[in-house]
Length: 253
Image 1 (cartoon, helix red, strand yellow):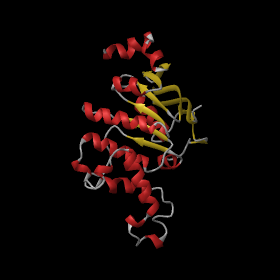
Image 2 (cartoon, rainbow, N blue to C red):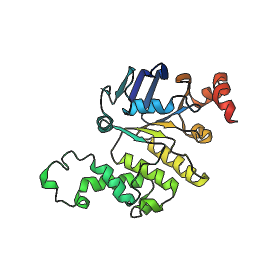
Image 3 (cartoon, one colour):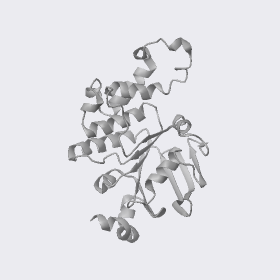
Image 4 (cartoon, rainbow, N blue to C red):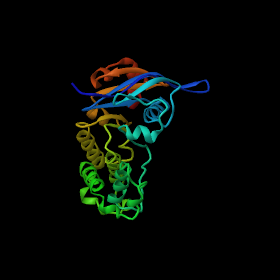
């Protein structure tokens, strides 16, 4: 049985009188991709922000690798094993692919840079960081681009780079917000293959509008409308749910 790595129970987030997320529960398991879908304004991004710590919940509980994350800052939750990508690609364009990923890997070196003995050490001599960086780049399929400036690689490769930076922090849970947005067919196929590789060692929550990719990738689906879950189950169960067809899928086909 797959390991339960993140469990969110009865999450609610209110902004004044508006409940952007209303009593939502979701469990994320290693070796499974859990897709969250729904129309614009359904609460998907707010849910992601609650799980990552970018927003505090009004009520509800979140446990990550057995630890309660309530009240923790996003950087603390990241160190507990959560990695996240954003809708807008978030990389350092003037840097090479390697340097982008190495910066992310260095963030996990607890002794650096606070130990003065390391202030004058060359970053490329930090063997553990380099190994972590190399593994992340290889897993993301960017080894052939390692020394290329990030601004010159394709949009799809930039999205892969952002995931590589996340992987360099050695997360167990990945929250991926529209990783296929703006991609052509070839790039999308490459990203789908990457996500299939990632699920072996991670619990993955995917927020995505590309329904073909969602149904090809997802082991579990949660459908949200107006901040609430209207259906949850396997792709087959969700596809045949009349509420889902009326509220969302029917609008797409």
